[in-house]
Length: 261
Picture 1 (tube, rainbow, N blue to C red):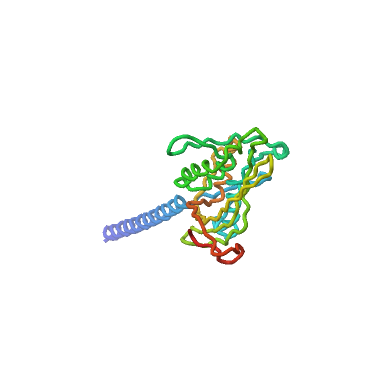
Picture 2 (picture 1 turned 30 degrees about the vertical axis):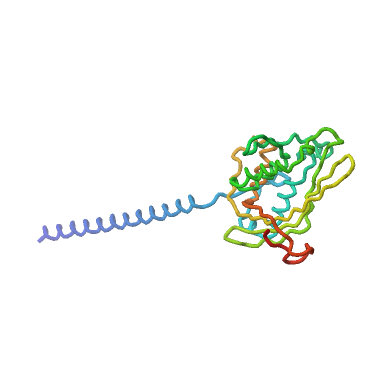
């Protein structure tokens, strides 16, 4: 009888131990599942995007802010002005260069059909606001319309250009993360020697999309040119198409003055 009781106690202890071990295994498995899900979420999460302010402070860019209509509108204005304002000087990097700008040697572009031409350094920097598949062909066309006199050292031959924006429409969302913005503008080329002007209508339908942005890993080693390029890309927006527009009437201030040509 005593032997039977000892055997039952032993069996009960083994059962309790087995149950406890099984319970611990379930807890471990659940912990591993939770940990795996957490790691997956972290791997799918987009990295924080930063931009450096004038005072050197680095702040995060909220993706929702890049979708704000005014942010998109200002992105178009800044990009187009940098692209088509040709002064013959490099974009100033310091206060001293504002007072005494450096001449712009231009950036040489190799044309697909052969030969080469130049675009301004500002235009080349602004071109990084374009999608990669659109950028190369656009730069080639831009080089064709950029007068060589923009880079001339002879003051009697030098030509400057300015994009005068008359109207920029509110962004119209055409798909998830994609918008369309219309602009009415004039590209005004002026010969500095006698002040003669050539006015070229510049009415465009611009298509924009959101992009990911990854900051430069070694910001302290960046050149001025690299800083300018990364500043452009930090907007988290890019232009992927530019179409011609026609005015429906002569009133560029009307609500719907555009149609695609």
